[in-house]
Length: 388
Ligand SMILES: CC(C)(COP(=O)(O)OP(=O)(O)OC[C@H]1O[C@@H](n2cnc3c(N)ncnc32)[C@H](O)[C@@H]1OP(=O)(O)O)[C@@H](O)C(=O)NCCC(=O)NCCS
Image 1 (tube, rainbow, N blue to C red):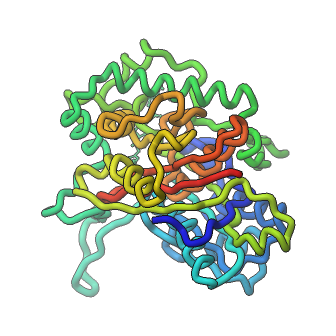
Image 2 (image 1 turned 120 degrees about the vertical axis):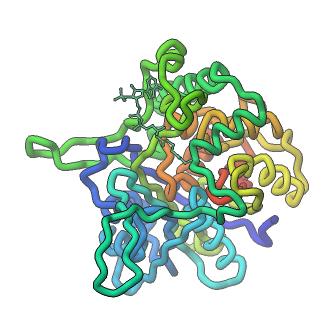
């Protein structure tokens, strides 16, 4: 759908990414969120109408509220957490945009967070009072059994089967994602979007963190080919051609034109269109192949009118399946690498995609960009952004 009025995306920022148990694991999820919200609030001086935060697995207790308080926002600023799985923070941006278009506010602090490292384990409780049972893991459902609810890795394998995607093609895609991300770090192309973190050092003092721990500068086709499949014994999906489980947070201000003028904010980009779609849960990886053309049609555009596209790389198999059905030229897709290299902290990835996309658009003088994700449970989302 095309928004009635474009809304401004201001000061898009993200933390560096951490691996599971890696450089950000010492931070509690709300602290990680605060590390993204605080610099955006400070740089813009925003007094938001609300704080809207995407999160998938750390949110029991409204992490948006806890993170906002930890970021130093006044107690009188409200906050809420949004779950649209991998598109949660993009949904938070969409909620802010809808509220702005409805006249229900002028500026929102929007973000997302995920700490795979600090994700809680959940267990079934007994249904009878005072009864005891051996601990049994609680199954988090993304769909009903009737609709189909395979694990994520199996979904990638199913798409690889359906579109006859070879292991070589997946590994080549993964190697290119790391190559692009390493090049983007090397050239300073990611420096603006990443906030440098000062974390307590192991032996006292502080450690400065400004690099994505997930990006491998040394990966090669041979190394990738040597990895074993992780989800099926005879499968093709490996740790190397999947997005890694990650820690990270991202934030921005979503504001009206009037608020930008009043505060002197220069938007990174204007959000002009938003589309959400749904499909069979086991084919959830195909979400972008439905969402992007539907978005562009609603906005009266063709893919050729779009300069740069960011599609989340949940798995190399998944994005290659999307490209089989909806080809996007490689030179316009994920030009700074994607989630296979940059990581996929579920709740934060939507805003991370916008930060990376606008960064690339600025450097190339691009006018239009599309960001899109597949969503667990069988959905997809795409947004159109423009720079004047
Ligand atoms: C695939 C998955 C299970 C792998 O988990 P893991 O085993 O903890 O992954 P690791 O990063 O430790 O990789 C295992 C080993 O593979 C090797 N490896 C991984 N990527 C590599 C690469 N690009 N090049 C060379 N070796 C690589 C390494 O030996 C690594 O160990 P090391 O980093 O200690 O040297 C996990 O990342 C996962 O579940 N990803 C998918 C997340 C998901 O479902 N997302 C939702 C999508 S909607």
